[in-house]
Image (cartoon, rainbow, N blue to C red; front, top):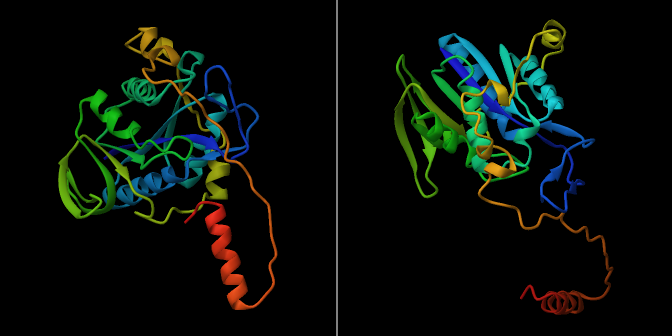
Length: 262
């Protein structure tokens, strides 16, 4: 069984700058980490490999420093990794990102199953996985809560439908986006870190793609533009009140009305 997991490097802090012209995050020099939701996708792949055998490969899109999250995936037990990286991809919105990654996937082997985390912490759109599947022309299921059964030609899963939980079976090849806590992610292994420190990471650039139409990538390929991004304001104001229960209750009620919470 051949499994591909899509992972992403995201900012490890909320203290980031935004380009005032393009509206995109300035990632250079910012502490980064693997998108937390992707850890659940990796663990799902590892569980399926333990059950069925096969190989696991990860793919990521980002600047060269995104190799760090691929190295982390190696430390968890992933076999191979590829990074889609080119300045032409900078500033991509969800649609352009999905198309770019789908083109990167086409440069790799055929896969039985593609796994994605539910969403990323720096975008929260939860759209890249399903859009990738549409570009690749394969069926997909989002919001997967658990694996019910794994067969030779299909997989049966439980999916969260907001008000209900439904069971569906989908044929390979397919794409799944998994929910948080589908499995508890394992910790990276120091032993695997040493054994994989020289493992090659395949680099995929714009010139490797079958489609070299530049208008489909990066800012030029993004039909949506961010109007404004700003970090959340930090409010550290404090007040200390004293008095009887009745007096404190009245003060709290007045304060809530003043702040227009009630």
